[in-house]
Amino acid sequence: MDYLELTIELQPRDPWAEILIYQLAETGFESFVDTENGILAYAQVNQIDIANPESNTFLEAIPKELSAQWSKKIIPQQNWNAQWEADFQPVHVEEYLSILAPFHDRTQHRGLIVEILPKMSFGTGHHQTTWMMSKALFELDELPSKVLDMGTGTGVLAIIAEKLGAKDILAVDIEDWSIENTIENASRNDCKYIRTLCVDIEEITEGDFGLILANINKNVLKSHMQGYYNRLVLNGKLFLSGFFLSDCDELIEYAESIGFKKNRILNKDNWAAIEFNR
Image 1 (cartoon, one colour):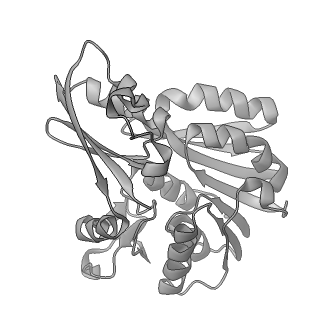
Image 2 (spheres, one colour):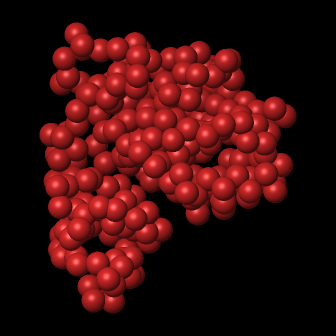
Image 3 (tube, one colour):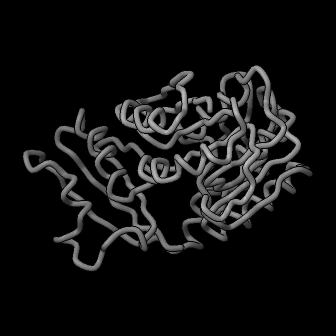
């Protein structure tokens, strides 16, 4: 899958960069990098209309009163993979966990080690949402035996779940290259209990999960919410992330209307994660 890289320079940068990230996330951009003068934003090309730059919906996210310069380029999949590997730095989730690539020095690790070769998939732990979901897994009083990891990406959350004691993990994604990456990373970490499916929530027939992990985006999470509820056991837990702190009230209200009960909210750099009980 090719990616669109959007470079935006802002004057002034703050507080507009943070506002713009929020707005671009609503138009289909899925990852962001802060720069000295603005941001880099990335989206799959099939999610963004790039045929006519002057009419692109992502340009509407730039406030009219803001002085902004922008440029775009397409990053082919093989170049994107190489960039991921070149830029991939160790991730430490407090003292709980170190997420490392195969080429990293392990002598400085903290806690549990998970080895990830990210390729094209989201979920290296660098992003605030994956970091919070990882932390939440470690802070569970008791990890359920059966876990569903929706939008598994690299498989990192599924791998952590197995290493913390889960015995039946279903890792699901709609992208076949994510499933391939999850299988590779599960093998790399000697995992035995991770199953994979390239489907969406409607095609999951099992309904006895003790924990569901979903690190996607707000709109997908809302569309999946009833499906999550139907597939959790009574008193099962749902961890959601992939959205901003300002989205929490909307998601909590929607989840509670279905039957979930909010336990707690985590936040990191204005991104959020929510823990619910069924």
